[in-house]
Length: 169
Image 1 (cartoon, rainbow, N blue to C red):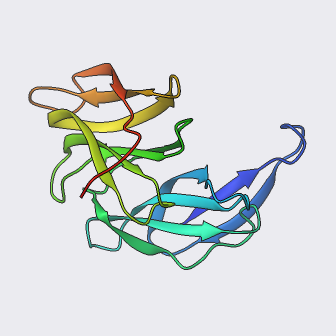
Image 2: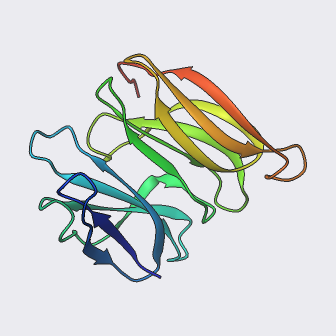
C-alpha cells in the first residue's frame, strides 16, 4: 500500500508521477492549502491499525511529502474520505466517523491547514461509506454519499449544507 500523486503542469497534455507515501496508505485526496505558498495537504486512508486518517504536507507541488502523521481528530474505519478546499476559506472533509464500522457520515472543517477539525454536520448517523464533497457557493457545500438502513450501499444520497465561517471550541 502506498499513496502518491500524478500531476500535470500543462493542462493535462502530459502527466508525471509525484512523490509516494509509504507504507500502509491508499485512497488519497489532495487540497492546496490557504497558506499563500502553494503547499499541498494529502489526506489518506491508513492501514496502520490506529483507526485514524493520515496526512502529509508537500511544499514542492507534490514531488516530496513530509512523513505521514495521524490526523487524531479524524476517526476512520479504514474507508474512503473526501476533502476539498472550499471557497469560504476552510478545508472540508467527509467520512464515516467511526473507528469500527462504516457509520456516522460526518463533515468536518479546518481553518488551520488541517491541524484541527470541527464538526459541521452529520449527514447519515447510520450505515454510510464513500463520499464526494463539492463547493456550491461561498456559503454552501454539497456531499454525494453512500448510505442505507441496513447496509452502506443501499442508495446514493446528496445533501446540501451551510459552511460555518467561524468555529468555537
